[in-house]
Amino acid sequence: MATYQRSSPDVSRYCERRGFSRHVCEGGFGYLLGRWTKIVAAVEAGYGLLLDEYLNDLDARRIIDELATHASDEEWADVEAVLPSLDERFVEATRPVSACAYGATDEQKSRYDRGRHWYYFRVPQDLSLVPDRERWP
Image (cartoon, rainbow, N blue to C red; front, side, top):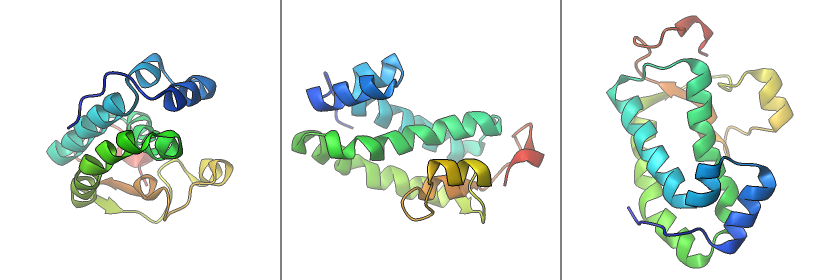
């Protein structure tokens, strides 16, 4: 995975305007790809956190998509060099669900689309370790 010293000015400004965490604003794609790598590994190993934590984890993937239009060509080329393989691993370790993991109200409010926001419509294959299984779609 590429190591990013700083995000491009456009990415940094966008992150600050959107009020993203300091880690996202300062680390940009490097932070987000590192985080997505850890999330994918956790799902592969048997996810054991709460649904709310899973949703927060999925938001990292959405932010990568959101930043795509603000990335420099070089930044995005680095992202595209690793993101497809991470996404493929995530798909293999998850199963599709009929409802958005956020629920119908948030799905509609945030305009989550099954095609564009596909990760919100998948849950880990193995939910045996999660303490709140009854809340998951």
